[in-house]
Image (tube, rainbow, N blue to C red; front, side):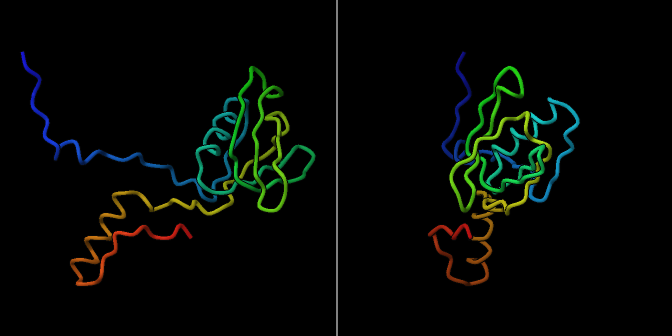
Length: 135
């Protein structure tokens, strides 16, 4: 029995990954699982976050790495602040988390780009193939 033929047109259009709209979100952190889930989302977020430590200090920056251990004390996130050296924060030291920065890739999906391209072409405007600035 032969597999059904797949055309290159069928392969060209693949559904994209839909990112959650997290900008401005302040997750409720009531237990260890909620904290781990929120920090995992923060790792996937494409903007800055703000972590409030249990001592009240805050660190704002891009979460570029996380290491998950068996306990919260063994787990940590690494943040690149806008104006300073990298900071490591144990999960056990996190009191609150805010998705404070603008999601630099929001609305920048391939589908959105193609839609804007064809809207410009249909309106008779010059449509560039060059990528738009992220800012």
